[in-house]
Length: 208
Image 1: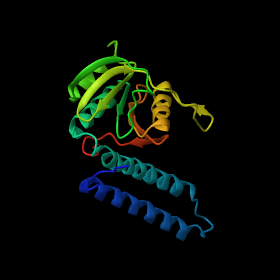
Image 2 (image 1 turned 135 degrees about the horizontal axis):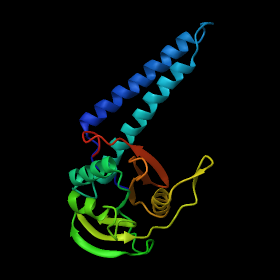
Image 3 (image 1 turned 135 degrees about the vertical axis):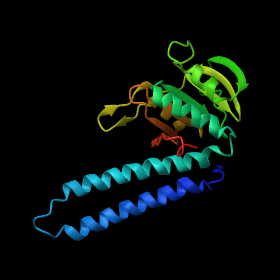
Image 4 (image 1 turned 90 degrees about the vertical axis):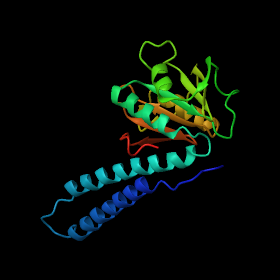
């Protein structure tokens, strides 16, 4: 499986800095744990905050690595995700990689157009008849929209995921496709790969 070029220096530097912050906070917690009057709860909350930020940065960094061999349209994908997230427009975007997904998904409406952020955003605009399904991207082209993906039965703790997230995980359980999800409830962006869901940061300087 190709992972592409992972030389995305600014994001990598930010990730390294955030991991160092996690390490520093852990060291401080360990040093002060022996103090009778010190409550570690607030320190654990700080460590968790830094760790979650580092996790999102790492996911954003590796998302670039996974995508770079399969599409050149990083900026268009990044811009679309940013706008969709800000407006809380739900979206489901499949980037086909080495495994063809034609036999796994239920095909929707053919598009056959060059991938642009404006086209992606318009497809997922609320009220558009295509916005409920998944967009399929192959290389630099939007092949189709309103595709139906297989659903995963996965749970997170005791809570079942929403349909978009279950569909994203379901396809990634059956292929090496990378699937991007924007939650219409929270605006949060995630991607799935190999059956796992990863949150990513949504600032324009951090995605792709």
